[in-house]
Length: 322
Image (cartoon, rainbow, N blue to C red; front, side, top):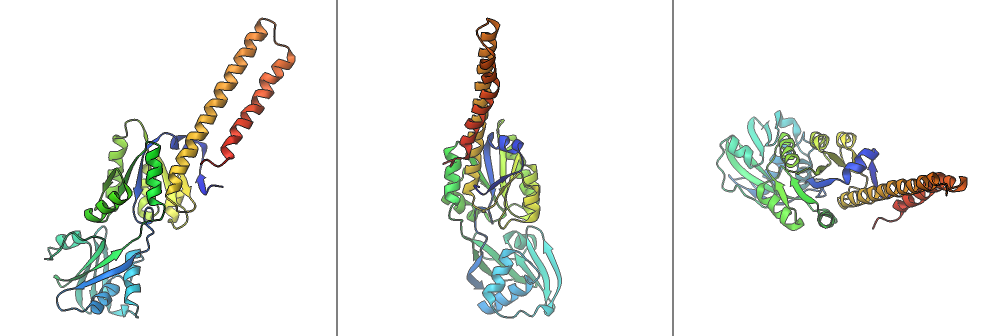
C-alpha cells in the first residue's frame, strides 16, 4: 500500500536495527536523466565535430551518459566507421573511428593513458576525448537530484541514522551533492568493484548496528547482496538489483527508505507490546488460578481474549505511519 515491498519478516526486523544507510548516486539520489550542458572542444575541433566523435565512440553503449551525448548530437551517426570497440571498466571507452584511436572517458582514463590535458576537476559529469593520444576536448553532462532526495536524508537523520553515498563520479561533484543533501559521508571515484570494499568499511565501523545499501543498477547487485539489508529502486532499477534486494521501493522515491525504517520500528514496538501484554496477563491468570480465584471464563479470556486484543493492537500498523 505504501509502495514498499519487503521480501520477508526477517528483513523488516533487520530494518529496525539499521544505523547506517549508504546510497548509490545515479538513479537513486539523482534521476539519471543526463543532458549535455556544455561542449568544450580543443585541438581545432568544432563543438559539433566533438559531439559527433563522442557519439560515434559511445554508439555501442547503453549508459545514460552515452545516450545523452547521442541525443545532444541529434543527427544520424555513421557507426560503420567505428571499429575495435572496447569498454574499460571505471574509465571509459577506446575505439577506432576512421582509423584513428579515440578515447572517451573520465579523468582517470587520461591519466592512465598519459594524455596531457588542462583541467582535472570539473563540476558535473565530464566525458574527455582524445584522438591518437592528443586531447580533443570535453563534454559536460548534468544530472538532476530527485525531488525528495533531500527529504530522504532529513528523514533518516531524524531517526538518528547516519547517511553516506558511493559514486564513481569525481570528488568535486560528489562533494557538491553531499553538501547539498546534507550527507554525513561519501566515497567518490569508485570502480564498481570498489563499492563492495567501501561498503565493507561501513559494515566494520557500524558498531553493532546494521547497514543498508540503496541502489538501482546492475553494478549495484553485489553491494546490495553484501549489505545487511539491500534496497533496490523497483521502478527503473535493473532486474539483477531487484532480484538481489531484500526490500524494493516500487516508486523509486528515496524518501521511502526512511518511511520503511520508520514502519519497521513501529512494527517492532507493536510486536513487543503484544508479547509483553500477553505474557503479563497470562502470568496474572496463572497466579489467580493457583489460588483458586480464576474460573473457566477468566481462563478463556486469558487465551482467546488476549489473542484478539493482540490482533487489534497489531492492526494499528495499517494506519498512515506518518
